Each structure stands twice: as structure tokens, then as C-alpha cells.
Length: 479
Image 1 (cartoon, helix red, strand yellow):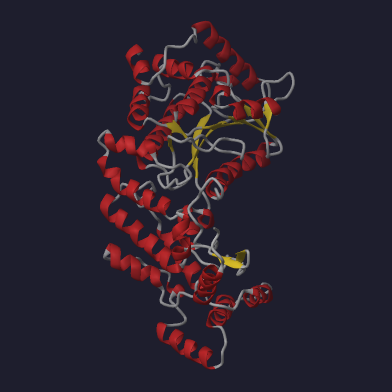
Image 2: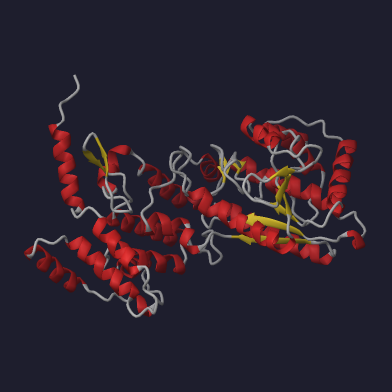
């Protein structure tokens, strides 16, 4: 164990048997104190594993007739997790459920995922959201917070109150320590949840040091049958931290070197994946190349080439009277992103992070297809064409999504609109709104959607871009 601690860059901790027994006693007392079920966050990393293992070890020593309330183990899958980590977590969750059932323990492991409309690919490729950054981190709430909170709120609806158990430590950051102290209930081991009513937080390893965590994991065997030295190897190869179960915006999402989403562009570079590749996981190279390409799209110099001037509400941001390309990715950019993603799929086969080994699901492709048709007037129906071109086969596409308008009809419409000096983009959008709502018994939203279409700037992206370039050329140079 000493050698492993040295390799992890830490010294052995002072965590002794007496301190550990006191923590087990605290956990059992808290468990028996009321009927509130526990939801235990598990990310597969060292801290969440330590917290869960300590609770499991403490509770398993109780008489079976005192195991009066459920203990839910909750893992959040963003659907874009690093495949190596997904594999580790899936095996762990399966072992937990099997062990709990065999030993008649009230633990049950669950994995939550984002809603289809909130998924990473639907928003990035479908809606054209720019890659997440420190200034616009749209991913955390959609991919992590919302799915976890829905699970917690479902338990609140069922039981009235719940206790959320998190493997967070004070020495991780001064911000974390401050938040933990701010919400602590006086005279209690619990804190109030920062956003969810009737949810309370218990942090059993809050005063553990990094050395305490690794010493515990290496000294105490996993009760569900994992080999904790596999976790040591994972960290050693990835040189990473972990992305915790995120249940509110005060929870730190990820550090600069971490296990987490393989597409993460909030960090400057993915040190964990680079280290895994350097340590022999060369099959991850296409993932890293795609991630680095996504990061390159954040270059301000490329903005006018890959992003629209019109925002999703049809309005334009101007600075000193000059239109700025702060809108979503252009459709052409999104097509390129999809092609590149599918090429990665071809290279890695069925080793993707989704249940079927894919990088993007058929349901996500269908929603992207629908969004392009409605919001981008993609009458060419590009998604099936791109999929066939890159993958070399067809999916069973939803039949009612076959385009109502063809490329020939688009050309005809452009000719008519040009003759009458009518913006073709707005006419296309009006037609798509009517097509989408055609035949529906309730069309209450049609007036709002038609009004939104008319409120958009009628100029094309090309016209706006040309005006922006003219304005920039006419701006006096600063001497």
C-alpha cells in the first residue's frame, strides 16, 4: 500500500481504527434516527466510492430487522462520459445490486440520464449551441443537475423528505468548505439542500484528507466485490480527479484534470484522456481528436465563419453598431460536426459510452433531424443523407418525418420570393410552422410561433455578414 500511495503522490494518513469506528457509529445512528430514505451520490471516483463504502460497511452490521428504509445509490450518466469510466461504473452498479440482493441489504443502484431534449448532441448539433465554456456552461444543468434532481424529487414526493449523501471534502476547495458551513443545520449532522425543499445533505467524509481517502480504500476491501486497486490504476493512468454527482450549482463540476465528459471544452485540455492514451489506451485517440476540434471552435477568430449573426430568437447582437456573430453554429458547421462524430463512430466501433456502444443514439439523430427541418428549413433532409454517407447504411427513419418539401420546391420558393422581394427564410419558417401543426386539434401556439417568425430580422445571414464587414472596414483604425 505504501508504494501505491507514493505513486499517487500522497503520504499515509492518520485515519485510525478508532476514528473509523466512530464514523460507522455516527452513520448507524443517523440511519436509525428517522424514516427518511437516503440517496447516495456515486460517480465512480475515489471520494464517492469512499463515502458509499463507509456507509455500506456501517449499515451492513445492523440487524436485518432494523434495516427499515431504502438506500438509493445514484449515478448520473451524461451520455458523453469517457467510455473507460462508463464501463467501470456499469460493472460497479451491477455488483452493488447483486450483492445487496444476496445479503438482503436495502441498497439499490440507479443510473439517471438527461432527457432527450436536453442531451449534449441535441443541443450542440441540433440547436447549434456553442461548445460549453466557463462563460456559457450550458451542459451542467441539463446533463447532470436536472436528471439527479428529478430522481431526488421523485423520492421526496414518495416519502416527504430525503437525505442526500455526497462524497465531498472540505479540503477540496475553500469555496466548497464555505458552502458546506453556510447550509449546516445547527446541532445536526445534516445541511439544507441549496435548491431542493425537503432534501437534506449528509457528508460523511467531509473532514477526510486525500491521504485518508486512499488509505481507507487500500486498507478496507470493497463490500460489493470491486478491487479498489483497479481504481488506483485508473487514477494513476489518467492522473485525474473526478466529476462528482452534481445536484446544484454550488457543487464543483470538474477540475482541470478529471474523469468526466469526453467532449468537455470547459477545460483547456483533457489531461485525463491524454494520460490514458499515453498509458496504452490508444483507441481513445479519435475521442481526443474530436474533443480538441470542438475546443478549436471557441477561437474568436473563427466566430464569423462558423456562427450565425441571428440568435435563436431571431435577434442580432450589435457592438458599436456592428452586428456580431454570437448566434448558434451555422447549419453547415453542424453538418460538419455530425459528420466528424460519425467518423469517430466508425473508428471506435461499439466502444462508445451509450448502452449500445454508440456515440449518438437514433433518438438523438431523429430529434436533430426534426430541429433542422423546423428551425433551419433543412428541406434537403440532411441527417439521413449524412448518416448514409459516413456510416454506409440506413437507419429505420420515422416515416412521418419524410420532408413535406423537396429541394426542387425550395428552389421554386426562392425564385418566387426573389420576384416579389420577400425574405425567403421567413416564408420557409412560416411554412414549416404550419406543416408542424397541420392536423392538430389544438393549435393554440400557432399565433405565437407565427408572430415570432415575423419578429425576426428579415435579412439573410449573408446580408448581415456583409454589412458587418463593411462596418468594420469603415471603422477608423486606432493609432
